[in-house]
Amino acid sequence: MKWLCIPAAVALTGLTVTPASAQSGDFLAALSATRASDPEAASRYLTAALDRDPDQQSLVRQQISVYTIEGDYDAALPHAQDVLALNPDDELARWVVRVAAIRRGDWHAAQAVLPAVIQTRLDEFIATVANAAVLTGVGDIEAALAETRTGFDEKGIGPLGDYARGLIYAASGEAEAASDALAAFISRDPFQYPRMAEVTANAFERSGDLENARFVYNALRETGARPGGQAGIDRIEQGDPYPEALTPTPLDIYTELLFVIVRLLDDQDSPELAYRYAQEIGYLLTPEAPLFPGFSEVIASSLLALERFEEAEAAYATLEDVLAFRFSAILGQIQALSDQEHYDEALAKLDEAEAILGRSPVILRQRAVLLFRAEDYEAADLAFAEWQDSVVQPGAAAAQTLFIAGIVSYQLEDYVEMEERLESSLELDPDNPHVMNYLAYSWVERGINLDRGFDMLMRAVELAPESGAIIDSLGWAHYQLGDYDEAVPFLEQAFQINPWSWEIAEHVADAYWQVGRELEAEFFWNRALGLPEIPDDHVEAIRIKLVEGMSRDPVR
Image (spheres, rainbow, N blue to C red):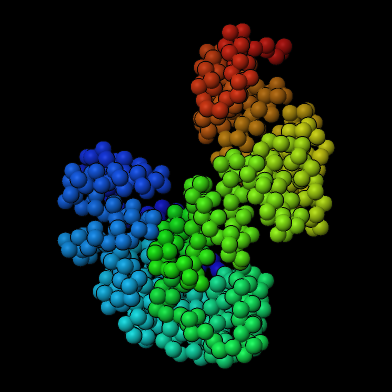
């Protein structure tokens, strides 16, 4: 369901900061805090700036943005109303007023501030969602249906158009038309997201199409929506009436369609946008809403991608009591704990997941990766070996795991096992330049398989020409073989790409020394000493080089 194509530079707020609005230090601090995903600090600084200059509209709009990023529309609303009083066309303010009106079910008020300015493809989709829901809310069903045709079908995403029409028909009481539209949706894009399939099954059941309802409900029992699937099967088998509480409302049209877009944003690695729109959904939902757990999962995964690890851990923890999300909630907490380097806690959490799934390949792989990140290489090696034994026929997704397993073998100086694992990784992912780099460099470093190693490094550079680490490997391979003149340009290029690597800086210095450029060598050794994360043993080794120099190749 690759429906969205979002430019990387899409802004969250559409705010343009002019020099005149950047005179306050509090304002600059607020901008910095916003970029650092610290909304509390951003709001605090903006409040201070507004105290000094309460009529500065750019400050007001930035305050609105900060509130909405964290889903606090109630706090944003008075500011938005003030902005609209001065500028009725301000799209940011219209959006906040519209969302607040949708929440209280005031569809006529929401209609008065429907989207007016469309700047990006994402704006087009959001506008279609808002128009479809609001027009349904005011009873203009034909106009709402027309919005889905122009906003979805004509944009090449017909399945989402079918889904939207199914929701509109269902909310307007046309059960059979809803069933037909959602049948068209699921026949074109079945089970992309279980929530969409559950809504479709509900429509089948409500219209009396119990055969199709039973089919979809049964399929849902194998997905994250299994409680809804089981509940549907139970109702059909027991002859219970369809619960009217499951019938979509205009508010559901808005949240369900927006949720689809949020999931797509999350899938397309746009966590800032996914988080921002998921917060809007959260403002509109109650905790009892069927969509609430799904919204919570997107919030948690977005926080994880935004490296807000403690918040992600807490967000995943709230999902543990929801049966359908319990396993993903535990895995999410494990990832958040691991990213905070709390490996013992992460491993303890993994034990809980193992109690649910047993020693499955997923669990074994996760345990091995955690032990690798904790640098417990012997335990990691055993865990990776058990994972390999559990996978009957590894697919492409196993390539990265085999790569990490190969690194573990290298750390243990088990070069035979390392080569087997890395070669297996390349069989599954033949054009992975990072695996090529690791394997080839290990050969050159030990003086074996030199021809193949150099060919592999050259290929890796072709595949990743912007990787300073890989270019450094090729240069250092030349150095290791005494080809110093050939090594220098590669190492220089690597340093230009990655000037913050102490290791590359040291390599450049060593190569300069070997070709007789002592003054430059001393500069780069000193440069390496000033770069972050340099190990103590290298600090001492470089200091010795600065005093004593290096032994040179006898040829020179």
